[in-house]
View 1 (cartoon, rainbow, N blue to C red):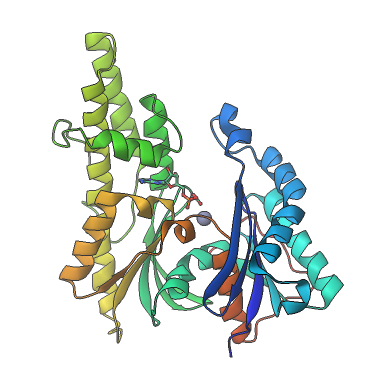
View 2 (cartoon, rainbow, N blue to C red):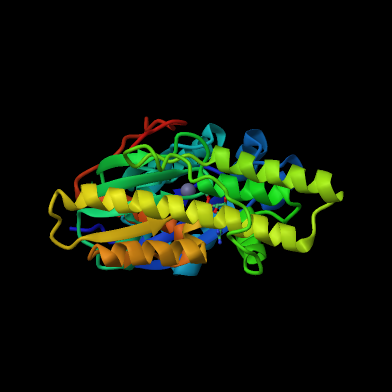
Length: 342
Ligand code: KG4
Ligand code: ZN
């Protein structure tokens, strides 16, 4: 039986989040970003993130309960991201969850952040196990076959940067605002994707592994060449660079998805489906390409709404509920783990 109502807590990167989920309905989902705090540093500063989480968590939890119209007495459990992530932030969340569990006697369950992303499509859609999952965010890129809340087969993943990281770096190279994904996608709309012949990394190698750092370097090289030749970048150059980069990312992910699908179908799933999660899953051309790849292979395609694709605590509460239904509980010595492969 699915425990009815769970509080979820997430603080593994730069969003402080709490949510209340009852069964499959999200009663509240509060996400407090820290974007502004890190803007001057060109990336998330772990110490600054940890302090901000510690300061914000109590208030975010209080807001999530209030918006759900719940008191602690209405809960059946507390789920918290116990890794992987920036350890100071993970610790802040885990300590908050332990304090609530100790004070109320509620069961506590530690959730893998990646499992939270990977189970999100089951929160939003009627999706049975096993399904194929592409997790694409600023920090992660992997193909998983999801067999259960605690059972994953990793088919492949990036050997260097995550695609979101590459979008962010390309935006920085071209003087476009952060986060890079949406601004590169917008700039690419007026661009010619065929003007620059960017590489399609690792397509020549078998398997589902991916690489994005060479692509970013290729954009840097073209930018420098243009700047040297004409003493600056024109608006059209920027658009063409973005379009060429975006199409290369799309092509690589689509082809690797085709290969992952072939492996997944080998296990004869009864209702085959491809699901996506992570911030990069917001990318229009990528979504369209993944949809056609899935459709051509006879798979259903599932892309949860963006607010549940990016970091949030509803996915943690939901995943915690599935784990608790399997009997999983953690004691008050639950460890915070900076690294925790699925
Ligand atoms: O899942 P997420 O919110 O955070 C983690 O990385 O865990 O993903 C954020 C990433 C950023 O790198 C952002 O640039 C990228 O997702 N992103 C996009 C788009 N929207 C967000 N990338 C490509 N196209 C987009 N439309
Ligand atoms: Zn994430």
